[in-house]
Image (cartoon, rainbow, N blue to C red; front, top):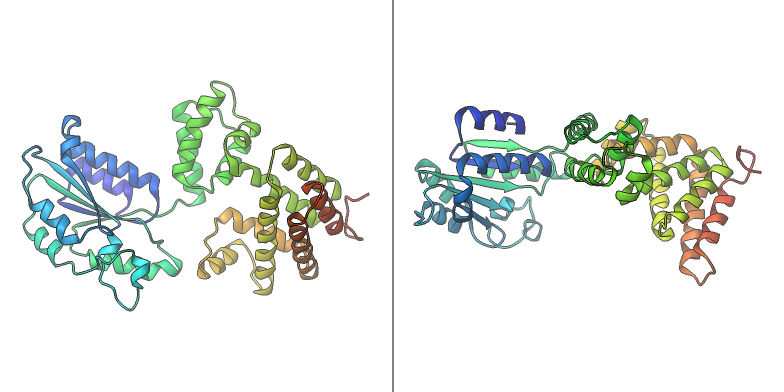
Length: 361
């Protein structure tokens, strides 16, 4: 079931004896966890009624024995079993060291418990390690199969761009944060569309901006990754051959205190991925995202779009040349030099030299 279906079921029917919370998305998982604890444990019983076991540290059977035990201090209990994937038997499809720990075994103790569960006790089995697609898909399905006896499974999938945008608008509205469309887009891009980060950053913006409208400068000041938008602007300026704009972006990064080797690493990654996408004959952001996910490199849809834009702006020969120049610049930053900015400016001048450099002078 989805998180919303879980919350609706909890409200209408009350808690099940056990749940499997599976998937990497943290915001909805925390919402559901809090709602379940609120439904089972009154505030004055939470200290004694809430227990956690990590299955990479102790066997599943030990946690089940705890669930069977009657507590002298709590009539109602919520028992969380974290790192649930570690309880799986070590088979040929999953290496032991990947699963973490040597506690893997059989689900028999859990299955036996669920046939006769302790009254007033709710098990919450949590596995947040694996994604629902890409190389993790088979591992996640294996976790689901191992815990198939659990009566209710709640899937925590990552937010789509549309869902992230809707969440940001809803949170901003509920907190009274004045967030324009451009600033909203910048916030989502800077947080990578991660719901938990969106929630945290909107709360920070509320405290920082108060009742006035949030500006792009506010977001750049509070969210470190927001500076990557200037790096993307630098990539686009280089793609157009716009030397003046590229140097302006470089000046912005310098004044913002950006660590130039880190900015260069980001640029190099962007160009290498664009070159890979061009050599693979990928056609658009969707193809790019799917291709890199299959390679085990998870990228956000917005990043795939930016890679597509870089690929379109640069012919293959210029991409190859750009990667070479970025390598030279990286080597220059590692050498004894008077100023990182000089190395970066030389790189910009090299990449915007030629007949296609529309903005150069």
